[in-house]
Length: 294
Image (cartoon, rainbow, N blue to C red):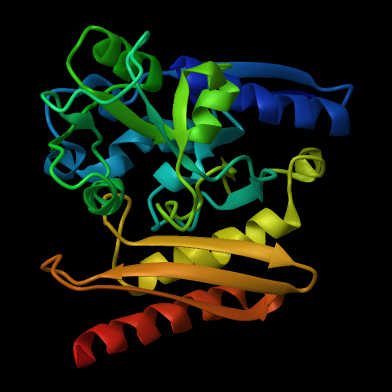
């Protein structure tokens, strides 16, 4: 049996796919495994902000087509970057155990403090919104490219710092680049942050994913993505959601931002794991109603 796994061709994407491949190998030791890498439209267009060129769906278009064509059996995504609207014929088959969910500050190599004359590099509207409260007065400028490309731009002097996901730096073996970890209270993570999602096409046998799938991560993902979906927020939206599984319960914290960006509301709810999606939708409606009341 041959199992082909599709991935973007960046170093981080390949490392993430290798995590999934190791899980597949443990569950199906007799299978022949192949990693198929490709460059996506989002990887090629680097001179414009994502929300101007179609959002993060541009990073999955080619991978989706490879699944439909039968060139690969599974694709691996960082869940925080996966669009909310998943095609019915390409279901999500597994969610990895969650890695560190926090965002981090990275300074240029050799620097000990922020340079106030240069901007903090950050393209995520969610991060930008929360950064302004943490670093009032600092300029924030967009930065595109994969993690290694962004770090190169930082070290070449374009930015005073970058804000990145701790999980990505951990997988790249670059934890020594981190200058500050933001607590989840300081900077609420993106929905799905730290989780890898495995996508497939309808009809593929997914038994080989038994040692990849983490039930708690799946529940957290369901709650967080339902929160964002209820608020009509995509991958470039400033809303944020973070769930923690505790026994048979789930605690969800969400950040709502009004369409004009002027009103923010943060809150939390607890509920049963099996009601994860409903919990996410309920918290979203609650925060939106609170914002409307002023």
